[in-house]
Image (cartoon, rainbow, N blue to C red; front, top):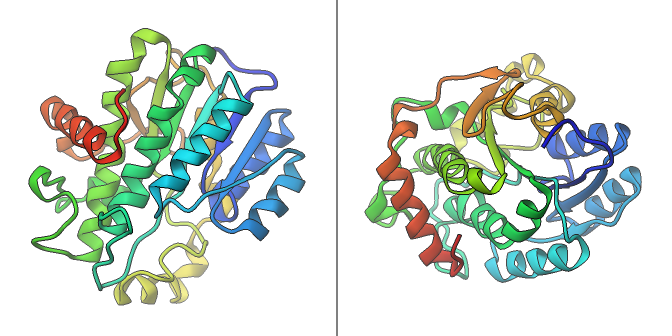
Length: 280
């Protein structure tokens, strides 16, 4: 898909932060932006700004993600861009969702996996692209995706759970590019940098301290954090960026070496299908 005019762009996590900033920027360029958020009030406000309908969904509830996918599929036969931006870092106490999964893993990986695979036909129809917000945390030395303990039942640590989910974002992106590339769908993941948002305010104590410290003054604005998101959404894959890639500041970045593990990516995909009940 070449650079677009009036594309349909679905942005999750769009009620605030870089999702909201990205939604505004894309709408300002003439695209039909569909914001998705957890807060009904904030999502309505962003929807009014971008001049389109919004959708409310809590990714901690997979039934709501399925309902979101069904509503989007009914309304939009073609989706040019799906931005999987919703995410969180949970606290020190392991939290299990009603679906039986560790909260970080579900919100950051399983829910976007479910949404993306459920919108397969709409993305293929548009020759679309899937952009996923990852993090340098997923490229950290300690980042691991443990296939026989994806929900961190044996050993839970809030930061490690977040790192695993962000590495999973890149593995998902690469496997998506391999599987759906022949059908015309492109995919990329990116690191937005440290951004002044509400991210981390419900996380472990060390993260809460960092995001509320004087360091906050040196962090990027949401608009700066969303810049690579917007670029990936509108630039031409194949000439300006490579499908399956991981980016930071509009340039290729170095993910974890585990991102190159094709077997790991394939097995993660299979287990994600089993956990969400969708096949792609």
